[in-house]
Image 1 (tube, one colour):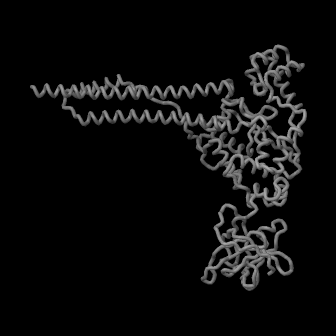
Image 2 (cartoon, helix red, strand yellow):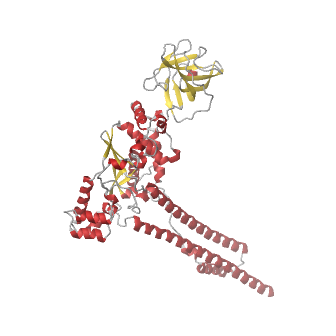
Image 3 (cartoon, helix red, strand yellow):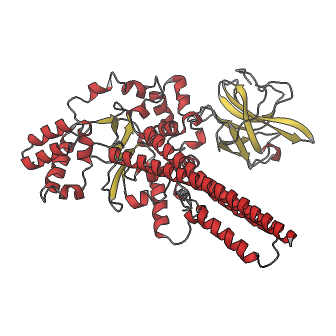
Length: 558
């Protein structure tokens, strides 16, 4: 009997210790959860403050937006633009930042970006919205050119757009009951009461206790992780908006490129210091090119009221409302139809028409660009790549340039980026050459840039001929009749090219358009060592050259 009493006392002590430990842990968990909930509330409160200061609380999610993307007007509903929650594209068009976004002279949101790529993103989002099937295929089939496809991928990454809809929406989701220590204590009591009628397995009880506590800890850790995601995403959103909001002097430049309209930020045109574009749009020069032009976007409330008072079609009561509501230029340009309805039935047509008339009369001047549209657009796209890529920026290579225009493109680049500055826009070296379809099989393959001959890049590859390792070379040389030819030859080891010891297979006359690069299709078979058919050459830029010894710069006659 005494042993039974001692066992009962021990059981009671264990139960008290167990429930006390559980309650202490549960109280601590509950306190931490409350702190997390308060932190979530603090983030939401800050978002609300930013919305009141910079946003529009009355946005229509199905409103049709006209967006000026590099001079092209792209139309989309706000719901399409914001459907991938958590992305920077959603943040931009959420309405939280309406008053900070840059606008053109007609009040449309302006994006200093490649319009082709942005249009592709919109089309992808529209398909995602209206299709029941997952869209995981490439969204850039219409933009399959290597450089443009790369631009599209970078822009999607920039905006945080994903191919599928599986975005990570971090919100606080927790079950308050798992943190209720009183309920948990009752549960343990019930467990003991039920099992007092039979032999208790202490190990099982302790194991169950440990499992329960582990699950609660996991739930708490999940809540902390979600909180950190929400905080991080909010800070990233603020930083992103800061990055796309221009400085007061960073106005928009409307360009007329032989009839094609483009719009670019002045800072983008000036991104490469010392260029002709930089000097043309310098702070000391540009204001003199646009005298007497006004931007309503820069007005304060006083200027808005003065304008309304001087406008014959705007009644006094609307002028009073503009003053009472402290409507400044940006607010005036973004007044919605819904907001104006509260001012009376005539406010919509009167105010909106007056604004449009003013904007038309004071339209920003256009800068005429007397260069081919393709050439200048390629330059603008490179400037935009520099803005988007920053330190990861790479100049164009020859294969990126349309063969029909590459001659005039180079001339246009030289005009705006003279001398060595042209290398900022396009790389004047074909890094790799792919030789194909030559009758001499050993000639075929990838040649990498290695040194110079006759003042231009030469190329080489290691191959096998007659079971021996040899060096195949492509180089330009000056012949004794003062004509220049390109050769595909074997240059003897430890010797420079352009000697009678070279084993020549094919040669081609220097192209008038691309005298600095081997031609693609005018090769001729050289008798004795060459075999028909002559090769075709493909310029490449996506294979990095291997390091090798330079040939030196030879101008010897052959």
